[in-house]
Amino acid sequence: MIKEFKEFSTEAILKVGNEELLQSYTKSEIIVLYTFIWAREGDAIMEIDGILTTVEKDTIVVLTPDQYFKFISGSDLITYQFNREFYCIKDHDKEVSCMGVLFYGNSAVTPIVKLNVTERNKLDQLHSVFLDELDTVDTIQAEMLRMLMARFIITTTRLIKQQHNFEALDDQVDLIRSFNILVDTHFRKEHSVAFYAEKLFKSPKTLSNNFVKLKKSPLQIIHDRVILEAKRLLIYTDKTAKEIAYEIGFEDASHLSRMFKKHTSFSPSEFKKQLKPEPAGKY
Image (cartoon, rainbow, N blue to C red; front, side, top):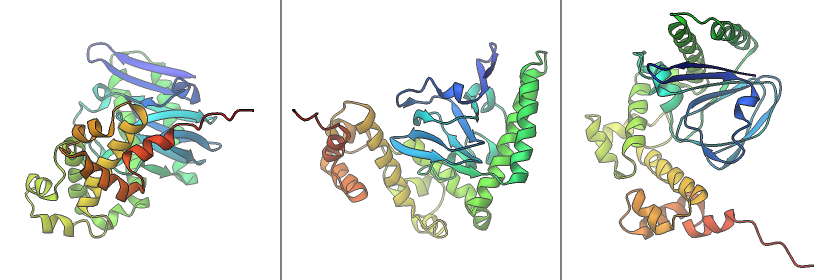
């Protein structure tokens, strides 16, 4: 079951469906759309950025448009997909915007939202309203669908803040999110904490102090994003380690190689080699 809304004047797209909506992702490819996948009655198995991931019953996984995705198995799922033109061009509170907690709370980790019985029932009811509204074609349909998506994002944002202890960070959440957005924008050229601290009008020491409760330093987050991109390029392209190093801001490929080995225990070439299946034996 797939229902789709398109607004030709703005090129906005919203897709609502079950696992059928994901079955075109038979090989890892960039997912392109903001995506929520809700496993309702059993586990779903998928590959996200080259990592085999099990989404357990009563959990929602949140994907951003630049992630690589492959659907492997799962049934009785609920899936929402939308593009920037549908939701992101509207003015939303910064916590629930396309630059909000769900998508940039921690750019190194794919967000997983767990649902209790109460929250599941709330979202079940909201999903029913979504389906009804998709069948109601009139002049205010687009605005209603955006309001419903905002409500869904508000609900899941509240849950992920509670479950990841964001509430304990108070105002630091805004700084952490702003930092992650900047890293995602500039990591291909800028790898120093000082660059991002200056953009945020903080000293490097002050910026680092704000990350103490997160148990991950700003430098670690920068390196995590660099390594994630290197892995994506090694897995999904035929580029050499030298080409990849240049693409993500290293003039000397050995610098990336050292960082990569520190994080993964493999050099880029060793990592690439292990992705290839062993040739079949002769009998």
